[in-house]
Image (cartoon, rainbow, N blue to C red; front, side, top):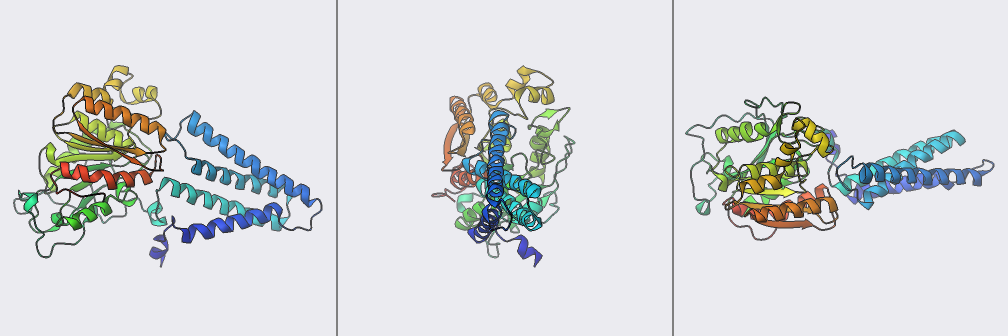
Length: 442
């Protein structure tokens, strides 16, 4: 029963409409509902005024923290601003009624404030497209933990022309998503468990050697985000169902070490050796434990936001490892807070070292690239990341890379953008990895 409750969708109208209606009814009742109190019109005016002031404070707070201070690194949409205003209005209403109202009014005000806060939380969640159900919010590592042994001669992948591959009898119909520990053997980076997606073709007794995709979450985040929220496994299941169970093996390592940490995918004394963890520990673990092809033509990397910045850093600096990349809403450079703080934390105060770590500088240093594809994506309403993406794409083309651009209509810096770009951008990446051509979006 509890499991079923946790899986109830929290983004559909069947839940949202009753919550919104309840919040509206309670708020209206508290604001202008019948009362036997004297001076009720004056009291109602105070309550309405308090709610209006609270909403204004909410809008100013969003403007200051988001637009002026840029504390969150994203531009808030009008929808999110509206919900924040409602939340502040509910709290202000509760304060006013607590001062002037009787016990029944105070009880109703508590209920109205709670309903408005819940409505605001659900509304912002829909706008960002993050949690689909309560389980996602409480289970950050929902996948079965396994130990994948080091490949031996009998279990390693077989060199096969993927164009001639046909599904053997008994092959599973869908891929499998599991949780694994990738130790920081060289980096000593304290990473959380990684997530691995195995296509059906990798789950047979003698799998073919398959291409690899490394997938990186945003920050804050965890390795499961690309699968739980980004639907990456679902998109690849659709691809596999149409192509004899084929697909890339996907590994999502933890480049952060904790949800709110940002080591910027570089090696530093203060933040840890995140780059070595991904490029040495994770890459070697993949080669030793999974049936994968070798060479940059069969290896790609993708990410969102901070993870996209990391994907650009790694794919541009290591064209001998990655021949494909998919960057969704990438920054121009590794950053935490601001450029000055980033320089101090990760580059020993060297502005030159910080500038050299930017993907644009890396591409200029490594040009020309050969048979290298980068698919870029951003949300239509995400002006800051549209600008950074356009700059990165122009630099990639100057450096000799092939590029594609996917723009998610009507979305911003959120997971609605991620899902749209994955659905429409993955086919080009998969084809570049040597997998069969996919017609249309996934």
